[in-house]
Image 1 (cartoon, rainbow, N blue to C red):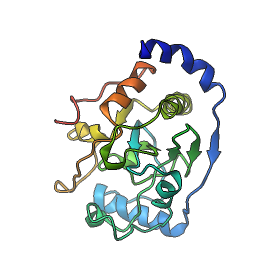
Image 2 (cartoon, one colour; image 1 turned 90 degrees about the horizontal axis):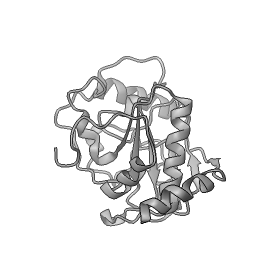
Image 3 (cartoon, rainbow, N blue to C red; image 1 turned 180 degrees about the vertical axis):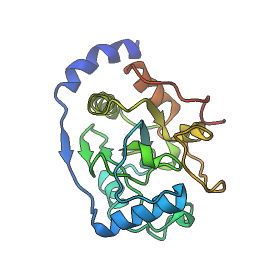
Length: 219
């Protein structure tokens, strides 16, 4: 019953959505750190940090407050409280979008710039962060769900190159495929965001994308 109502209500809600511009700090320092990340992790010498997106990666911030979530991306260099990814370089994490718990959408950076949001796939993906998921709770809201569906559809209109929509927990499904670029075999982290439930609900309401090349979180 929930899925049926969701499909009926979504088109009305999506008509009213807008994308707010909330840029994070992105100076030449961050650009240069991104180039270094690309060289270190992908062994590519690049003149700029522009990407051709082929994947949309859905995340949760693991923080239930918008201001605190956004603050995590403020610094251009990685804070010292991220020991899990410190070995991966000085570039701070980032994403192209952040969605508040009420469904408000914020664009944080240019869509053709590389963000640091997913191991192995940064160079060909757009990241959408959803505020929530503290302590791995499956607590993203229906408003966030609708906003993500809207964003995915809008991104597909803008970038015909996008082929996949995945949850962060599915990122390792791409190991061994041409889209996977990470050269450090020891650089991996466990991810459970945004949740299987959330991704299944998104996929119920979108079409025209390829399935992930493995079963997902346990593969």
